[in-house]
Image (cartoon, rainbow over all chains, first blue to last red; front, side, top):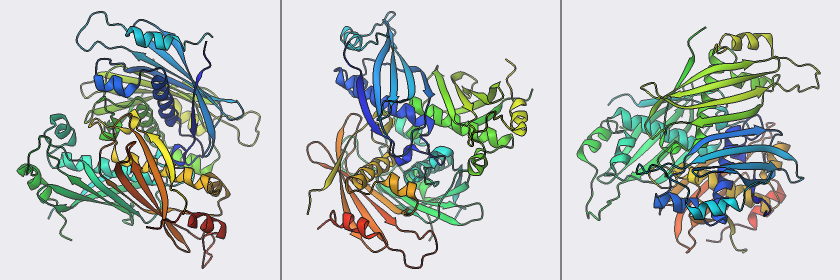
Length: 139
Length: 139
Length: 139
Length: 139
């Protein structure tokens, strides 16, 4: 298996709140940015999928666990993996790591294929499934 | 002239940053929320305009002046007025007021009609112009 | 048990993305706004807690399930309940309902008391526990 | 004069709205990210300034002009320059450029030093002024 895809971020002023920490909802924005970068890296950029309109992959579940606070100026690496891969859905996992490798937070998003035209048995396109499979977590 | 349209908000945790104040860019989000409420109140809700697609009114300019800090929990009233009304554009003005009537910030957005189909001389629809005119600032 | 606390919102232009739906992370921002309104309604406004600094209640978990899309202009009611109440933590539940009562999404956030000064056995203040208990879900 | 500092961004799904373009207020978030990167590059990172608390530099004005739409997936370069430098304030300018060098938008923010302790004649620290001066626009 390849090394996990990593997306670097920096905690910006607008990510923080008056309590001095990353506002929890912004973690999901960063996770989705990492997901967009990941999808581009495996050859299926999200903007092209949405523009073509032939693949509708809404998020049906999202969750996060917050272990340590992230503060203004912190540099964080988001590791992205495919946690599950099914015929019509996949789950993406995110690990937020500090510069010293500490696990700061984890997140998970579930994406499910919707058939636009009433197709009874839609499936993920073979090319997308193959690309995702190459980043399937082995844990 | 009618009293200015007023849109009440509360400064939320995610509006603030570690410096303890409203992050400046979020003022524009609140101004646009006030604009959406204003447009609904005059009978031309923005979501309907965008869905119909027959009117494209992109923002071409935005500006704000920040006079006093807004902090978590503050209740603020945003007064909305039409500052300018032309054949193909209009400017909206916003005044952010504290509960005691202090002026906290002002903002201004400029909206310009774009002709989707190459129409040489597009104009704002008469109904929209009339609705906006009823809230034109007399200052 | 009292009727659930309800926080009304409208889906704004900035809540949507090019796919025409509420961007998933913004649901958490709305949930937290509902939580802030709820905390104020039970007499323990969050801004006062944070300013006093005597209670640190970071979010350690957040999750959401998305059932139906929310679109620009939709009016949504967020019902807030206390799902769990322990000595040092509590969980808040959120139900996003359409104007016709359809369940659009659910969310859950977990808040855990941190002892600032190394107090070995911190507990939620009795007043806060009692206020939360009055909104404990009976389901 | 040195070449302008450049901060690369990509327009993300959450930057867009249902009209398919960058939501105008998000341009200011990106401008501030570029400002943070710029301040770090000249040796005066904003997070350190805020943490030390010895320099309070609130934004008192912000404005933007939008020339061409930015869409999901677009790669944009934000050039940062110091437009004005005075004893107690400075203005930062931003130019948003497409991959082909087209000017998409411009922005400007004004930052003013506040004396925390009633100091009658506060001035920008010499080191900060010198660092900013090296990026002063010559236009």
